[in-house]
Length: 272
Image 1: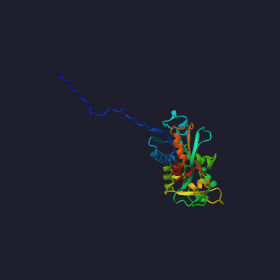
Image 2: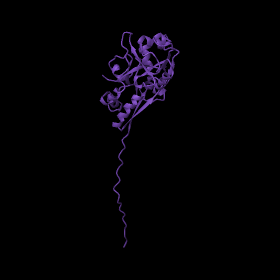
Image 3: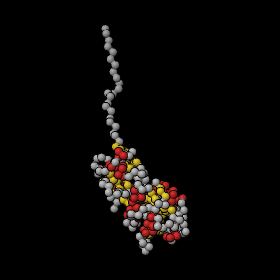
Image 4: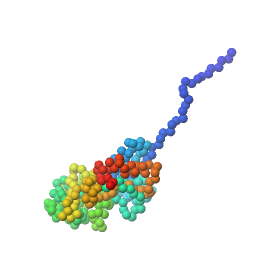
């Protein structure tokens, strides 16, 4: 009698693999001043949105126009940028997240604790060359400025210098860290930086419009109330408006609402 051997598998039938959800990358570029804020926002947002990856790229020496409107001309791939200055001639979509203050910083031993707007203009244009001219000690003023493509430089120039050029004697700092290093290590030095990035190595110089006005230091409160005069908006900008469902829309909306605004309010003035 012929016998047939039948093998029966003990394993369950094979199941079709469950598709792995894809992570949605959101590409942003930040200036050296807004890079820390974008990192803070991205870290908080991605904790609650695990399928989103926010790619934070920092660049110097490249303008917003080159990044967002001429992407083929550079190595930075980004759909939106976080910046503190938007030139009027650039036709870009923009949304506000808050307001930053431009802090005027000096060497820690600097005897001058406040300046008027006119005195600040005289310093950075090169008209004033010695602190003695401004009520300080007999010490040469060393001006420290950001590079021409820096949003902080562009905002500072627009509000303080107008059409006047920065003195040719100015030393250039290409990052906020370099600004802090140069000012803190150079007697008589003065520069500027986002108020959120100031540290204990430098002194902060208060600003008043005229001698009769009280000097004001940059704080989230004084910037929010517009008492502090040197302010710059924190903007998300892009070549087009984001659309619901594209990831960018949801992140920007979150940054404008409670959780995002609480992060911004820690070091900046939040939205009204």
